[in-house]
Image (cartoon, rainbow, N blue to C red; front, side, top):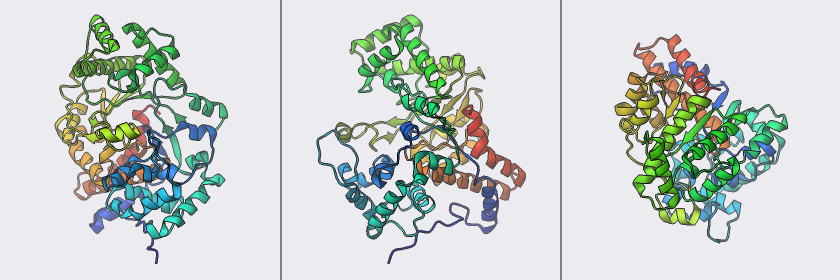
Length: 470
């Protein structure tokens, strides 16, 4: 007999009945607010073409490294889950991949992935029984049938989810054709891009040399010259701004910044282009690039996001067989106080600059990031991110940052996801957790109910809209 799918209305609220009632009251005031999604990785082509999504595997499983990294840890080959491989390996039928996933869905108990997916299954697709081996085919068929209907086209779901703005992320070498097509289509949905220059600022990126040549071709600049290289960035940033971009995004291994002279920067660029450079040279090049990007943000107004701290592609075998972003990125300790100082010495007191800093190193919240954001006008704290966008991670973030940085040196929530259908669920989890935290402050007589209600609305809607200039 299938087990019922239960989505309790008080999930994630405090166990104490009085505080739970406060949290419930606060949540009612933010539950239906529009979604501001200023940092994510959905495919803009979905909204340009508005073609039906494929099936449950292509939409929900194969793009989501949160899911298949857990299954891989339990010995399930990525090929068995529909994840594309560089090798010529025979593909698996989508239904069989879904059965592999469904038969192991219990692995996700207690994880945020289960919270998000159960809400997608129940609220988006109207399923009423839990996913397991016995209901795998029911799920696969129900989801597949729904995805072929007009109500489940990308633009219809965008409207249904009450998304006010959705930011995607593209490389400097992207032609932005999908975003241009969206703008020409006349559809009023607001889908904007974000400038992510990593492939042309990270000499250790496997695509660096090829990306740099495409970068030169798109801009007509001599990128072997430091001045030409910077001008190429300015031109591409302007092109991104024309399709609505309000932010840049920088996923460096560390938060290192530098402030070299033009002569020193040109010499470093020459060494990088020669291919005869050390790991320290590559780090210095990335560090100088961050400072240059911050300087450009003073000119063009783009908000700067920095999210260091991931040891990317840690599993060499998976990287070689399947490429990057396949669930093998691991958090590592990250310094901010010394790393950001060269940039902050140059620009940290100019309120025209807006920098949002994320971390995967939770130990840095109270020790470094909250004190930095609680002082420098240019800095704001991004939300609990990636490995920590979970109920416990979000609570820890509020507990460790609020006393020093307050709520208003943070930027609300962003979902940072490729999983389009989970966006409402992720925002719902964040709203519930914040309301639970605020309810505790009310119960402890540290906030009034009126102050808590205002803050809840700010965290859910006003702060991200303001921080990202939306």
